[in-house]
Length: 572
Image 1 (cartoon, rainbow, N blue to C red):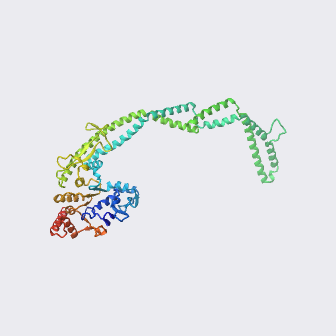
Image 2: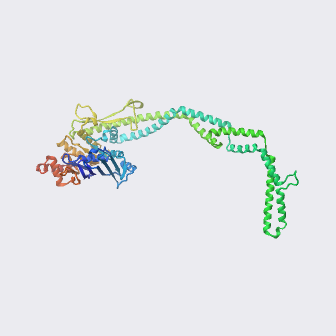
Image 3: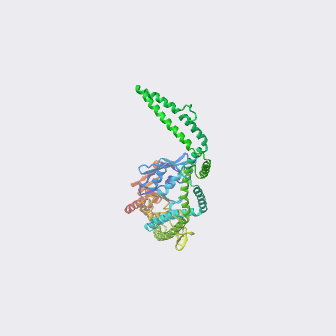
């Protein structure tokens, strides 16, 4: 991380090791700014009071290495972020006026996106931090992972049955709550289908009847026009002096035909005139037949108009033409069959729902039994860890309980509420000393005790929790001596399966770290780039001596510091 203008830090770079990193320094040197900076990178609240006096804004930038296929990497890419060789670049700016901006993989994002990634990236344990494992849902997840296949098997079956039950219950509710609406819909469909069936329309019938009505309604005009046209083409038998087109064309053809042998061009014209004569004769014949066949029956016209009126009544309600009306009828018949089958479907769904609820009851009971057994083992293991962390009389337990619900499933002879993960509410409880009631760990422990409880939980839970990084602040509050050594030893154990960062004032804890960072102020009270250094060799012995005795050059303190380092390395 690079930190600029945050609290006492002017400009500093903090490089954390893959294993166990201890951050040390004098009181007030800015060690907790490491925790604050990481909190800002993970979507924590932006407090303008954190901005260094005289600066316009505070900036924290971080480069977080991600495991291949990690959920955080997928979520970041969905937000538009680009990964840099498997690492995620995160930046947070807080202005002196209180405005905050967040950047993820080079893309500006809402601060809430950083908060979404927080649970997947870092578990922060300190007095003022909201811990992931303090949430009951996370505690249930932790217990399920600790239980392993004993919970994973029935939970997978339960989740599938629960998903199917939700789908069945949703469809059943839709069918039953909308029964009146569906009955009304069915009645309307039946009325429409009966109306169409009574008329029995045929495809294209409306178009054909429109044409027939046009002919019948204008029969006299059509007959008169056909007669006049026939007379013009073939002549009027009542007027021998009349001139008709057929006679004229025949005369033209005879004139040319007489001389056609003398000129091929004129012969071709004669051929064409002959074709015209044939065509005129055909048209004249059809006109004569049209006039003879034309029906001017007023009764037929009335029948056609009545039929058209019936078809128009259908197209007014069910479609723009008869084809659309017939399509509506086909679709409505299928829908009516579906609606008429609702009663049968309701019976089938009800039976399936009841069967699934019975199956969920069995699986929920399996989950409760498996969680109860695992909870006892988990609690005993955490309690044993606490005995070595200066909390010898503390006892941790899990409350695995259910809530009564008459609409729920049966577990342990009771009808209880259930959800996508079973019927159990899981909560981690702490009794800090004999006689004290067991209370939720968020309420039953002080800040230092809470951090130690979380450390004990994480050590027991090591290897099953997907969070890759743990940050402990004040985990060693109120302890010293042998208990402090045990804290360091357990942090080192946790660091074998995850990255661990600890802000500490205890040399017994710092000695177990793979890397020790020293935070120092300059003479003007600020921490600059050179103020965060990696301690190695003699420098590390000197800092541990200062932490032990307040004197860097004390021979006794140096000997003790070297002994601590030797002990830690021997156990590593």
